[in-house]
Image (cartoon, rainbow, N blue to C red; front, side, top):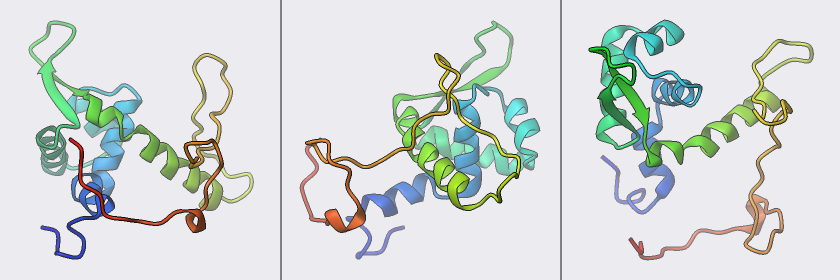
Length: 148
């Protein structure tokens, strides 16, 4: 539950849905093409009860959808929804921040590359509508009504 001060904050609401480590790691793996419970469990090494709880929350929140397996087997698959795909820039931003600040020179890490070119993706930036790159000092918060 959000307190009154944070009720109007989109960041606080987003963190309520995707703010724990395992939810973000599940979404990262879903972006990498994982679909089945067993794939998530094997890749994350997460206890089955915690994984089941996080997957259930992501489905209930509308980020993943549970569907029959695409290969016609009796299994179910977790498929990214439009809302879930919209988390992609958040995961990329966290990835790029981690690449910049959390690895020592020469340390091995994964890298995200463009499928079409094989080149690393460009660094995300925040831009104004006119294309200017914005820093935190260039922005402020204000209350607005959600348009729906």
